[in-house]
Length: 424
Ligand code: HEM
Image (cartoon, rainbow, N blue to C red; front, side, top):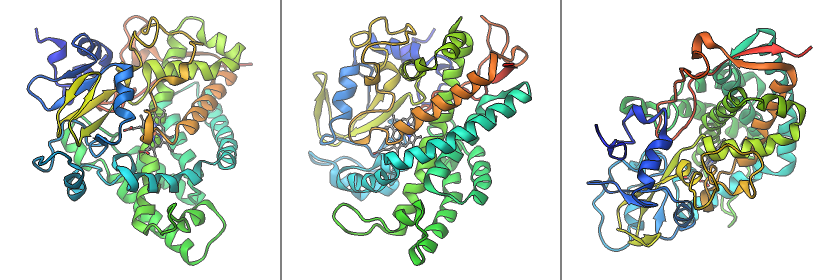
């Protein structure tokens, strides 16, 4: 039989069910390991992951959306690839997205977004979330059950970002439909991968109109603020840049949050006694969510490109090679987390996990994702006396049938059918 470590992470569907076993097989080869015959290193160590993520001098993020397996659109020359990367940026899949940018273009764009994530904006958004989650959970309980992913999480995550950005309420249903039909990032299917930006293209049409209208006549809303925004040096971004940033928020905050909620709910229904414990003491929820992020975070990995020859964990990374940083493996590194495979609520310094990345590109939506997850779980726990998996779909305890999203980036269930017993 083929050694687990020799399977092709980027195309092999059998790894989806248990990517952790694959990463453990790689960890045994060392925390920084070059895949045989490939120009890809895999980082499974926690300290080594931080080394890469914190080093924006030697590493470029241009490959973060396309993934480490994508061939470079040029032949590396010289001892610094920065110029070549910028000259070919349009040829990297998603190379123009915030998460793939480097240096000043990255810090400039990120600064524009940070105005959306102010404490007052987040507070208003939280009020919206509470109302929406309450309604979605009440409807699901009234129906006796739901598919948590499609019926609850996907519309919830979309509507929350739409609210944050100030998308007019009349257009929100359309956004939900477009996003629900999209493909998650990092699809294992080549054909789907090329079409995966489709929802972003449709939404871009809406955002061009919103922003143009507000450039001509500001309305004192979030979109007007974005339309009037300047870079830190005082220059103005063009409209294409503002549209790219707004639509990217849907891409970045959609599947990630929807899947995290699914992963969290699976712990709630599978861990004996856990739902009663959380119902009795909802103050445990934040620590519970952090432990889910550590063990079953919804982003398995990201990628970087060595633009100079450098070292990570003492291993030489030659210029032009790619590094796949496994958040899933780093978060289970026994050198950082005691008994890493165990599910323990209340681990010391748990928030130091890397489920949201680290360094210059650390997830800007992390505070939002944490609140979203807490509020939905809180509402489901409050409105039920018992939550169970629908065994007709998922099979009995001990022989569950669960399908995971076919993506090398996203970790999450395609569907999670729940049976809900109301609380009286
Ligand atoms: C559980 C939910 C989420 C997870 C696990 C997650 C994970 C991540 C990770 C790992 C990165 C870093 C990628 C890299 O370094 O290559 C990232 C970046 C990012 N995330 Fe999230 N994310 C989540 C939710 C959200 C939400 C709700 C939003 C916004 C509405 C968001 C917006 C972003 C943005 C804009 C970036 C790029 C930041 C940059 O490049 O400077 N994320 N996310």
